[in-house]
Image 1 (tube, rainbow, N blue to C red):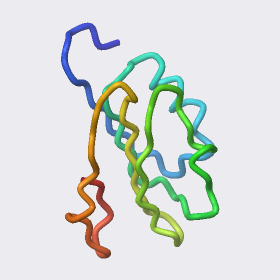
Image 2: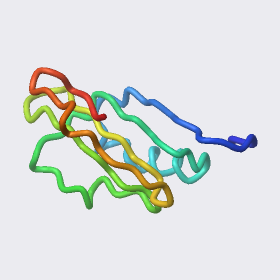
Image 3: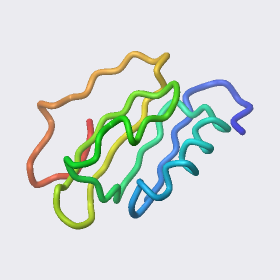
Length: 96
């Protein structure tokens, strides 16, 4: 899909990721995007990372742990990255 060189980013407001994980895996495979940001994951700590696994991507999560909300980001595994946990705030659903 992305024919030009560079870092390609995708954002999806998914409104509950679990029932749509196979479609998200297809998007990741077809685009090979550097990062895929997801909002409205609707996840809590009862969902394991293994259920959300996408080949060749690392996942970083911030679950709301109540109805709705939550964010995560998939970063292609060939890219080095660090999460900036010092920028996290309990009132803000964000990944830095």
